[in-house]
Amino acid sequence: MTGIAIITAGREDAYQDYLQSVKGGHDPAEFDGYLSEAERDAVTDPDTGCVHLWGTSVDSKWQSVAPGDIALVYRGGKYIAQATVVRTRDDPELAEHLWRTEGNPWDPENPWRYLTFLSDVEEIGVETEAFNDLVGYQDNYIPNGFSRVSDARIRRLEARFESVETAVNELTGSGVRIHEFDDDTTDDDTATVTNADLGQRLVDASYDGDRYDELEELVAKAFSRLGFESRWIEGGDDTDVEITAPIHSIVEVKARSNGTLSSPDATRIAGHKDRHGADHAIVVGPGFAPAAIEDADRQDLVLLATDHLQEVLARREQYGVSPEVLAPYLTEPGAFQDDRLDQLDEQLRTRLSGTQDLVAVMEALQRADAKEGTAVNLRLILKGMYDEDRVPDEHVIEQSLNLLAHPSIQLAEYVDGQYQPTTTTANAKVALRRFGNFIDEIDADDEETDV
Image (cartoon, rainbow, N blue to C red; front, side, top):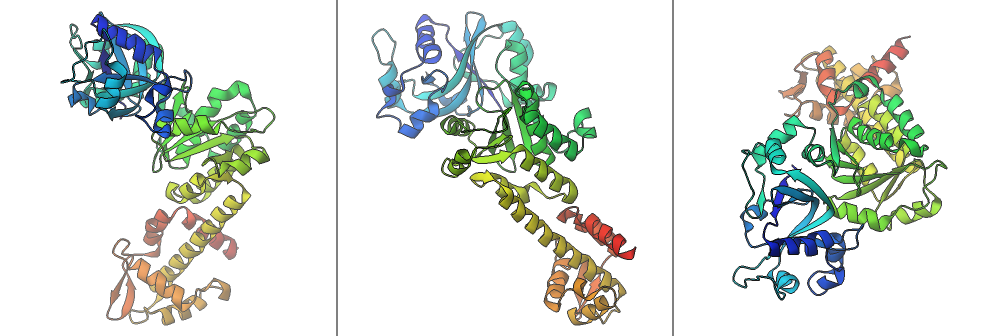
C-alpha cells in the first residue's frame, strides 16, 4: 500500500534544509565512507545525479514510511513539493556529517538521524484545504513535524481512486497515475478483447512510437491476462509497468519502428528495480539486437519480444496455464527465445498427458466393480476403452490413483485394498480444472476420436 509522508519546512532553518537537501540535493561524493557504492547508487536520482533526502529526530511516524511512498513538503499554508521515497535509513553519523554545520540548530542529544531518501522531487502549490479535503482531515488541520497519513485514510483514498498515486496526481497535477490490473478486471476493453486480439495489438503498437502510452497499458493488461497482478505507471520516469504478485518485477516497455532494440539501459533499469524493491526486471519490445541478447544474462535482465508475449498469451488462453508455471520462464535472466517457448510447450504437453491419465483412470473406476479397483484390473478395463497407445502403464495408473485419493482432491478413496470413486467422472473433470484448461483439450480430442 502506497503511503503519504508529510515533511514540514515551516521554520526558516527547516526551509533552508529543504532547499539544500530535498530540492537541490547533495553530491553523491558526500556519502563516501557512509554508504557503500551500491547503496549510494541506489539513492542517487538518475535524472539529477544528486542524493535528495530529509532527516527527522522523531521515529514514531518515520518507522512506517516505506519505499514507493509519496512525500509532500509543507510550508506556510501550502504543500510546496512532492517526491517519491526511495528508502529509509537510521544513521546518526551520516546525519551529523551532512547537517552539523554553522547556522544550523543541530542538537547532538536529538539528531536528525532518521533519514528518508527521495527521488523525482517536483515543486507544487497545493492549499492545505484541498489536501485536507482529499484525505479527510478537518479544514483547519496543519501538519506539525514529520508525519504520515494513517493507513485507514489511505485505504479510503484507494477506494475512491484507482490508487493513491492517482489521487495525489489529481490534487497536485504532477506525479504519476497508477492503474491497477488483475485477471478479474471487467472494463469494456478487457471484457471483450480476446488474448489473440490483445497479443496482436501488442505487437502492432510495439512498432509504432506514437502509440507508446497504449503499448504500456497493453503490456500491463497482458500480464494481467497471464494471471499476474500488474499496474501501469502512467507518466512515470522510472518504470512503466510493475508486476506485484505472485512475483515482483518491474517491466520496461520499449517501442521501435525498426523492430529492434539495440541495447537496454541496464544501469538505469537496475536503479528502477532497486527503487521498487523488485526481484526481477523485464524489458518488453518488438525485438532485440544480438548484442543485447548476449548481454541480457550478464545484466540480470529478461528480454521479452512482443511476439513471444503474444505466444504466451495464446497458451494461457488455450490451457489456462497458471502464472506460477509461467513465472520461471518469464524471470530467468536472458532473452526469452524460441527455446524457452519450446520448454514451456513441453511442460504443457506433460501436464496434458498427466490430466488425460487422471481422467482415463477415473472413467475406469466408474466402470469397475467394487473389487476391481487396482492398477492391474483398471489397466485391463482401459484396454477395452482406448487404443493401446492411450492406455497408461500400471505405474502411471497407480500414481493417478494416489493423486485422485489425495486428501486435497478426494475424487477416489482407498477401501479394503481397492480404490473406489467418490464422485462421477463429470464432477471429477470439474475438480480437475485446477490443472488448467487441459480437460477441454481432452474432451476435444475425444470428440475427434469419436468422429
